[in-house]
Length: 221
Image (tube, rainbow, N blue to C red; front, side):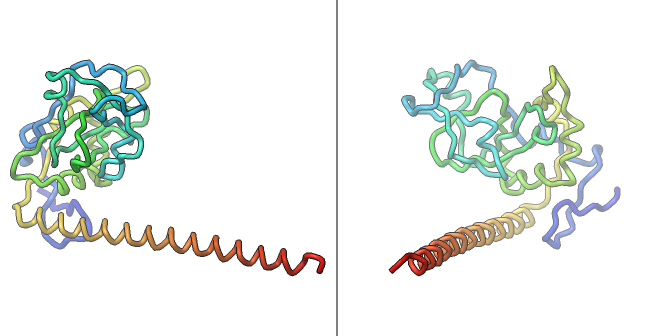
């Protein structure tokens, strides 16, 4: 089996295994696609359950800025309820590069998920941060795309297709080390974004001040 480092930035020697040596995703991820009819989610928060959709699964995280809501019967709510640590995969999209995109549910609020997402409830031996980075990694993405099928212009990734993909299973200490490093990188990125936003705001304020001073200086006395 060829040794192929899967994720950059960590020195542990876990590898991307061949199909006959890998744990299959279906055994480790506890995949479930919702098959109940959630109805058409609405824009206003008149119902108490947010329904997560494709736009909410971005960058390995849940984006809570564009929510839709639904009034779910108790059975449907139980079938589609999300728990902290669940991973949501994009099941269908017109762009093949979007299928299989995934994010960890962080428990920001009670939520369910729409039918074009697949929920994974992880085996206790897998950490969500590791799984999300595993499936979103540029070296793994081609496998996700190949597992999809085209129907009426849309690319679809079934639970069977996703479940047949190989998943590496490093020892828990390696997963934990990776998760800590990933969290550090994400925190650094957020800090840099905040600093850039602050610098942009200061530059805009300075530009406005200079413009105003120039306007006053050019006004007739």
